[in-house]
Length: 131
Image 1: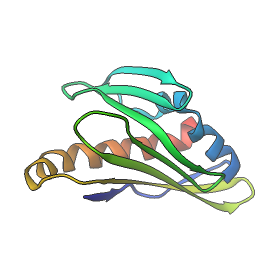
Image 2: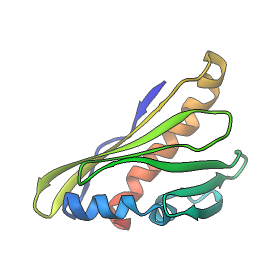
Image 3: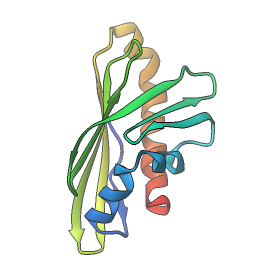
Image 4: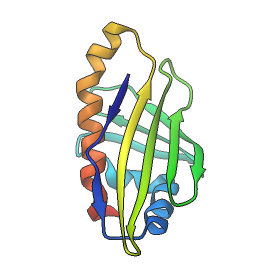
């Protein structure tokens, strides 16, 4: 299953945007209002939970300076990645698109597609003001 957020424009350079997203504690600023838990576990790992959903641990798996950050599930039953693709538009302007990629059975995919789409959209929508 592959989902993507709308592209968002941020009034910061690609480097500033990359640096913000590289610091996992900053993801708390992007989370939806219905977050029930957020905890930084390590310099590259954090745990979060949305109300009514299980806790999810994300770990930074890859970072390509100023263009891409890959967060992946760290443990748990689901294997997926959350990828932030950063594109520089001008020296003080960049674009970000989030991609969600994971292997799920048809039943699970049906159940989680809506909530994950909404989650991606919220992260992207919160980015321009948080970065």
